[in-house]
Image 1 (cartoon, helix red, strand yellow):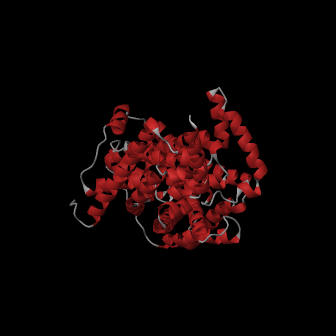
Image 2 (cartoon, helix red, strand yellow; image 1 turned 90 degrees about the vertical axis):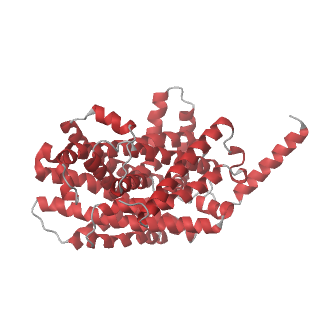
Amino acid sequence: MNKQDSAKDILNSIQDKSDIENLRRGLSMVEKYDAEALEKEKKQLIILNNEPSLLLKWKGYWKLSGPAWMQSAVTLGAGSAASSIFAGSVFGYKLLWVQPVSIILGIVIFAAIGSQVLRTRARPYDVFWKKLHPSLAIFWGFNVLLASIVWQFPQYSLGTAVVRDILDVFGFGVPKWITAVLFLIVVTSICWTYGRGKRRSMIVFERTLKYLVFVVIFAFLGVVIKTGIDWGELVSGYFGFYLPTDVKGITIVLGAIGAAVGVNMTFLYPYSMLARGWGKEHLGLKNFDLMTSMFIPFILATTLVIIASANTLYVRGAEVRNVIDAAHILEPIIGLTLSRIVFSTGILSMCLTTAVLEMLIGGFVLSEMFNFEFKGRAFKVSTMVANIGFLGAFYGMPIWLPVLTSSFNLVMLPIAYVCFFLLQNREDYMGNSICKGRQGYLWNIGMLLAIFIVSMGAWIKLFSVVGLIPE
């Protein structure tokens, strides 16, 4: 390397540093209030990253994982439950491919988002504002906040319904407003543990969501074990890529894609990593976290629900109108009464995790947009905005509503994907960390494919809404 090239590299390095320093970096949560625990975690990661034994490395990563569990928890809500139940009850095993494809496309984008955030530690809203355009930042933040409010309606509607159904089994006729208030108190109590700023409280928060996801999975595992699996149909469902041609079928597919990855998750994921104080040392952990905490739980839960629905509702030709109809999924195993308890518990767990995280997302968005600390009274008040969805408990909304909401959410998603794609290739943002060569090409191809598919889904949904796609 000659002196001219060396001087050029130094100038580029200075420019990269200057560009990054102009951005707001990190969050004053674990970094400020639990710095000692964060430093201990970083030292532990340095050892793990160089661990020759893959098993020991994964074991260490498993203990430190967390932000991707939050993505898994928020996506396994009323939308995923309804989409999976309808997919299985209407099409049997045929639409098993939709959920894996949806989540894989999402993980490609999330891996890029994670790489950007961990390498630069810049706050995405500020990046959108300064590196793209202020209107994009505002539009993104507004859409995320709106999505969180809209998505809270079905959580309260479905969550309140299943709580009352469980209590009804025991002969307790509890008024709807009492059930809704109880749901609100539980959700709020869990959410506010996150705003304490301590690493330990965040880990407890993330593990609470993790265990609720486990409840969802085990609630349907027994059904599949009891009713069996048609392995031929399973393989065909995963690799046949059956695509319905009627509006109802297309809506189910779009609803599944929209429920797998929502625009609000593009805000939650980077800010949940920054809240934990994650940086470059966490790049390996980030990839492990996405696969084990987001991809696998989502695939397990949705696949089990689809198979359970196919084995019971589809083979009978049963029509699903509400959560009580869907409770018949477990009837062959333990009878209708107990099946209502088990099934409703699984659905309730899905609603609780999503409702908690919709609150947290609203808090993140408003804290960033109005520039106040992600902790304390102001943050707690901002999380309550999403609970406008509390009103959903008092309106008779059919189980189809979450599916339609997912489809609407899909329309807003491509814009966020395009923004992160542009940032992935901006040297004045990524600097020397920009991904080049074969890896860069592959990553860009994956992101473009994700953008294309969600854009096509949005296009189809828009045309179906305005009536240009006939039934």
